[in-house]
Picture 1 (cartoon, rainbow, N blue to C red):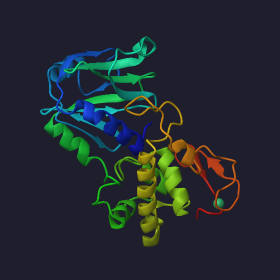
Picture 2 (spheres, rainbow, N blue to C red):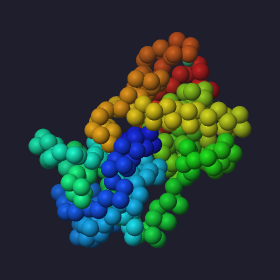
Picture 3 (cartoon, rainbow, N blue to C red):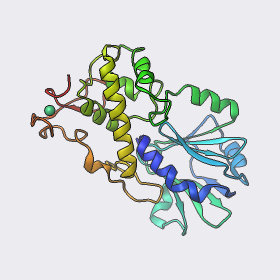
Length: 274
Ligand SMILES: [Zn+2]
């Protein structure tokens, strides 16, 4: 699933094309990606609506149309692109949501396996949604102390906790693996056993890695594409993710892989991560 840097990249790419534009015809090919909204209501609310803002929250792209906010959670195979030209025919079968813009362009949410979701939230729905999510790691208000007090609330493995959106927004499997390696923290260590020094390092490493990944337009390890339809480049800078069995860049030990922490792949160095 695209994580913070990937969704941030998508949002930065599509934002200039969408701001102030009005939606014309809107079409939805499948209902199975809708959550808490019917096709009828979604189309009704979007048609003719003007885009007031486009931003990211956690791993989701948010399109604010004034009375409502459309929250796009791109799945593993989802992409959100503004097309200047007619949609290429080979992409047509995957175009789930198509919204014409008043300048002739088109916003298209494509999802090959339809693993993503669309929400349409009113003001109250938005409040409930955003307060259920943890702090934004790139927000200036996010300090080592904020991270520390979130992590102190759980005895679960630290990797699980930083990926849990209620504790910290935007981090998924790729960047959890990378941040814990950078900070030299054992991914299976209970979250509440981290020290203040661990909080300092982890806070700095999470931010540094997420920011570097945004500069590189995200990591394309499977299907992720930017808001202009290009692959990202940060996959070349990942030091542990998908590198099980390769030598650790720090000490040369073979990187270990396990599915025991959270059923996802965790790659780490026995020697560098304690
Ligand atoms: Zn090592």
